[in-house]
Length: 519
Image (tube, rainbow, N blue to C red):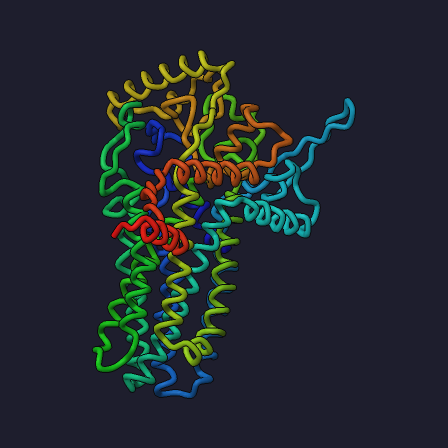
């Protein structure tokens, strides 16, 4: 987690698309400070989930020629090297950017003190007096993140993917040794197929296929709001690999019965699962960054401020506390579920078998995938710009578009960045980048109490301070789902057939016929 924070300090925590949803692209947006995310997110995800396969392979080679205790010795050596590297690794931000000056007002007296905190400063606008306060606020911030229904679904989903990867490693190793009678190096090679498949997913995190780049630029309202789906759009890309992951797990369960099936079949399916798992975890990380990055909102600002009043603005440079807390929750669920998969994997294999245990895990992942779709579907239109500032917003939008046109006409070597930001802008609303409208369609995740878009609406006084935002987000999602289900036309009922006459009625008619002499 510490290395992860260092990487976000280097590159920022914005995985904004080059053509974001309902926004006009601005390369000078402070959320893109550091160049934005790139392929390193795929590398980090591979190190998080798929490196387990390589570790299994190395361990299999070690125990083939040496005593099993050497595996523990190598683990201790690696941990010592990492701790030494963590200690010697320099801070990305200089000391001046890791502390803030806090003003304390007591009546008419104003005193100032130096604050070095990150999380406590972000939550209560005051720095900690000792490290325990920072730790307490870190735990409190993580719990606040977990209380959001949309984020809770993403955290459980990503954690379950990690558990499925661990379970596949355990079961594939058992399958190779027990049923295919392989030596330990070849057992490790079978398991390493999962890691090789995940490596193939790393280049797709950059602007390439399956990346967050859309098919074309959307600088007009018509292109932004028209309903269109292309094969590179977010919705279709997420649908392909999120649905494909549990289906690949189900197919793996079908081919994990052992001989006479060739061992390349389960190894190939394990590689596919590694590929899709790396894409899914990277997408979850990107969604968390995009939704909970508040780095350009005061306090907790980073990047390049607008105007020439930089010295007059009081700000603290944030290490993206909400994003980091979200990652901590996701990793916690992943490690807990993985521990359960490791402990229960052998037991489930003995009682249920390879196929059933893998199929159950894949089935649960399919249910979580459906829940993920439900919390990511944008269904509600919310106001992000107050009505009192509508005219100013229109005037600012017009001026901003003209500024962008002028900037595009100037050669890059002649652009003076200081001159571009020298003119102090008038008041403008807190907005998401450069929106194309005063409203925005949001989903359950973005309606959470800690999301970027909720924070903006709070700043613009569009949310009641006493409202329970997380409960309201859940209720809004359930109401929208209920409305969609109620709109489904019910299947028309077939007209009921006339009931056959009862037995006693037939006897009465027969007696009347016999009495009247009719045959």
